[in-house]
Length: 481
Image 1: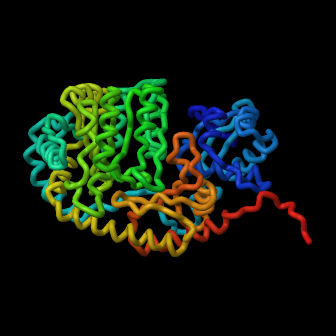
Image 2 (image 1 turned 90 degrees about the vertical axis):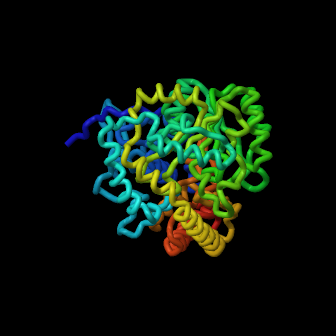
Image 3 (image 1 turned 90 degrees about the horizontal axis):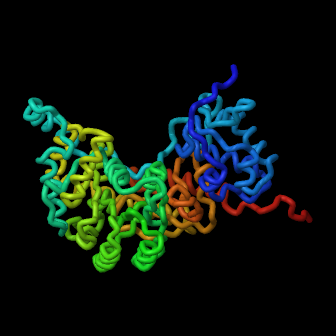
């Protein structure tokens, strides 16, 4: 039966070329390389089902290759079920179904997910749920709509900010459905199509996708993950003056993916630069509580303490307690928060009451969070040791907190490695996912949120996958003697 034409959006040739990054493997298997790179984007969620692909000529021009190569790659993708076509209607992304397993879905049940930097529910969650069931009775007589969040939870969040050096009242806090929801709310309020948003390079991929979905333009300022402070504050200053972004999105506490943390002196300088430019800054503090070397309350003050009333902090319980709670928050001035509440009505009418009660119970248990940090410290050290053993040519700076290592490889093979790793039973996110325009092919993020035995096995498999892609000869026509 002929495939039905979907009603999906269309991706342009230049945009697809940026997403694919350095897809060539240096061999003559250009069609196979291109097909594998497109499969990776499909299985990584970057090319949703139904997405219409550019015409062969347009894609050939964007990639600088022949139409013959494009046609051969599409034939491979049609054969594997990743692409469907109809004469006169073009080609689009399809579901491979059971026709075959893609490169990120190897046979068997032993695949290790090395893409999610997140942990299972913190011990004590079930007890918190039981306690919340009792307290829920106090709220059943209300209408249940809490656009700012429960006062009792906002009080606890505000107290945490105050203890970290940023005096905060409950009126400056709004509970959201996770930190990403918080960021999207701010994005909708501050930026529109064509507006620029300053970001770090590399940065959190989902933030980049949200910016692009709003038809805004991310403006990258490179970090130096190899040492030093990391943040190019002079570069930020220049970008603020030259690009005039509507706001900046920064992660200064155990930055995702690099794990870097900006010191107090750097925060003072960066905050001054932002305040002088009158540029709002969204500070993602999702990982701030995962300080593996010290007490989060004695670390550097929040960047918002230096950036003034235009600073907006977003936080989350997803990395510290459990992603299944889907709760986060925004901390901002009362004026900005009032505008955000008004903007929220177009998206939702508040976060679930029961989950807020559960989180309130969990925030009272500092001992559980201390145990989680101790556990993650052991996981981090296990990952660092495994990388040294199995991948001795890889380098990284051991982070003092967060959930991942940002590893530099001796060759630019990150996207190829992600494809090859799947056939070895481990799924990883290539460095290109963390770049505004792709690239970062010498880098890869490895999370340490799995138990040490799983970490050890994942890195062992990565080592085998790397051996299969590293040092691929540029030509198969070398003289034979």
